[in-house]
Length: 400
Ligand SMILES: *Cc1c(COP(=O)(O)O)cnc(C)c1O
Image 1 (cartoon, helix red, strand yellow):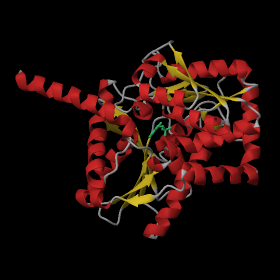
Image 2: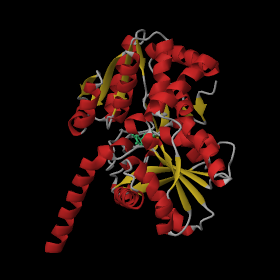
Image 3: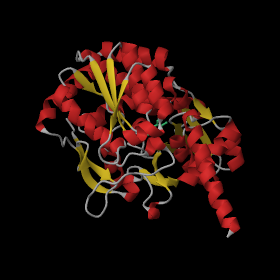
């Protein structure tokens, strides 16, 4: 089995976890070949999640920009409002097969916590979500959703008390209870086999996009674009185009206030190779290798690392990784709301920002597919706060 992507990935865990990871690998490799497993997963994706999600031609936005045609893969229309449920559904079915009674998961913004609590309720499993205390305070609506769905939320105080610390705690606790408990990782990261299986569960995005684009346009897109936090929605989209190098694959990282300010979440464009959370990958670190906290207007891109396959694709130049800053993401958010009547997640708005930047450089024969990873209702509060900060800054400038 391929446990590495070039030098990246691997299984950097204490010995107490290697048994649990081996059991997971074995179960997954068997399930993947099992028609009954695939049929059950597919049935849930159709009838519960609402797949397939549409591919939509954003005509008014494209015509306004006056260049390439922009299409949106509508993962925002899935149950729970994002792509994350594709993965939690798959992993929850694995947990059932393994006879586990309880799911644990890490969460930052809370979206993966909600998607995990959702499948736990669906399958009648116990559920505990690890969340940094800083995130518990600033993501209260998602904490309420998790509670409503019957999950407990364990507030983590160590370190910066955000996502990276929640994941450390979840891995540590899992080592002591893996006989009864399944650890459901939320992105294409962590120790092998997680990056592989999360990618496989998210690859439905890319496979559908490829088929839908052929049906609608009679050919493949020129570019597929997705935002990159830990990298699960991007790797799922990219998976549909692995054998077609003529389709440019673009990952968009969160540039925050700009790479030069150090206030960002761009692990590939602004990080260094390191080892954390069971894998070798790019992480945001200071000159002593100390892991740094992230900054982005979008809470869901706030992971200080990135999945190992993206690190490999970046080094080999098999995919392109660019940055969109807060202000570009907000402008893209506004544009999609006004031109298409679609409120995108701030994470997805980063991918959209790239498309908006690129589209005018091409003509309408050029097709760009943007993965709209989630809907933006959850972000309205953040956006209002962001605008308040900006207008205060502007009025300060005007008065001096
Ligand atoms: C969590 C999240 C992301 C980032 O996670 P990836 O693993 O990089 O896909 C992106 N978009 C939305 C809507 C999310 O909820």
